[in-house]
Image (cartoon, rainbow, N blue to C red):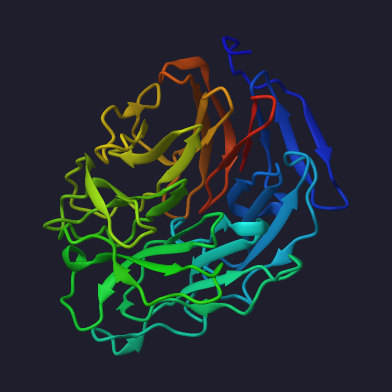
Length: 395
C-alpha cells in the first residue's frame, strides 16, 4: 500500500442514498467521496470516538446556509443534515475563504464560526469608511443533546471590516477559541493595520470574552485571506498571511501556551505580491507532531512546527510544478503518514480539479501524486484518516 501508485481505479459506489448520498472512488490508499447533497466547502473533523463530523455550504453563494452531518463509518453514510445558521441565508461562500469552520470540543459538542452574509444578523460594528454596519463574525454551538444548534451570535465587538475567513478551535477542558482578522474600532485603516483577533471561552462556548489582538507585532493581515487556528494539548497554534507595507504577504505561525492569552510567532515563508491571493491554511496532528499547510506563489507547502522555537524549519512543497495550486488540506494517520490535498485551476467563479499526495513521517512522498476532476466553484477538499491508515478525501 505504501509504495503502490495512487492511480484512481474506475470503480464507484453510491451509498447512503436515504441518509445523504456520497459517490466514493477507491484506490490503494485514498478514497474520494462527494460531499453529501451536493454541498461545497466541506470541513471534516474526526473526534476521539471515531465519529466524523462534517460541515458544508449549500445554496446561493452570496447568502446560503451551512449544514452539519455526522458519520460513524468514515463517511460511507451520513446522518440527516441539520442547518447550522439560525437565520436562513446568513452564510457566505463567495470567494472560497469566507465559509464555515468547525471544531469539536468537550463531550463531543460541535462549535461553528463563519463570516456573515450581507443580510446576516446581528450586524457588526459600523465601518466608518462606508457609514454602514460591517459583516458579523458569527458563532453557534450544538445543543446539549446534539440535535440542533443555538441561535447565532456575533463575536466581533471591538473590531470591524471582517473580510477573509475566521477560524475556530476547541479543547477537552471547555476552551473554545475563535480567531479572525479585522480593523480595530477607532484605529487606523488599511491592510497593514489589520490585526489578528482572538475571542476565548472557558465554558464550552457559553460566553466569550471580548476579542483581543493575538500578537503585538505590526505585520498587517491580508484582508481577503483566511487564517486558521488549531488546539493541541497544552498549546494553541495559528497560521495567517501578513500584509506588511501592503505587498509583503508572508505566512506567519503563532503559538500560545496559556490558552490564547499571549502568543509568540515567527515568519514561515515570504511572498511579495501586489495583490490579494485569497488563500487558506490547514492544520493537523500526527501523534505529537503538529503540521501546518499553506499556499505561496501558486504552490502548496506543509511542514512540522518546531514547538520549542515556534517556527517551521523545513517547508515541503507538493510534488510537481505549481502555478494555480490553492487551499491545501491535511490529514495524518496513526503511522505518521500525512495526506496533503489541494485544488488546481480554481479562481474567481471558476472550479478546478483535486490533487493529493501522501508523505511518510520523514516528509518523503509515498507513491505517485493523485488527481481527479470536479472541484466545484468556490469549493475545496476536506480529508480524514481511517483507522486502517488509509484516507478519504471529500470534495
